[in-house]
Length: 168
Image (cartoon, rainbow, N blue to C red):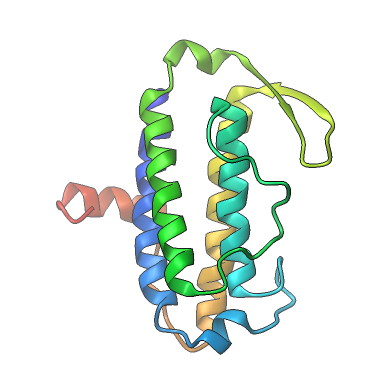
């Protein structure tokens, strides 16, 4: 099971590299344009995913930065946003690779963003963590289409095929 989360972490990095290469084609105005999608813009969604990753990684490990909120936009420039995404993807992979398999049957005690104490099965939290990234990547993928950019498929199976061909 631990290897499953390593695969998801590496697929996440692969998909983000492709997605951010497509996002780079947009103008600063397109990246910041107001939208009815979650977090108000492409920059808002992309920032949210990084902040949420940081919050969850802090919950999982007790290490790193735990953001005060997950709706800020601390990276108004795309280059800084991309750099933050790349660094976070490395942290996600390192976490997955170092996750002791025996821990997977345990629970996670953490504090929600509103300050409430929570206890959930770790497997559920890990599944949510990766599903959350996929969900918001899908939003960004769709907003690229709205901006006239047809992004490549980012589904997990495409990562597997690319990896088998030595392309990931």
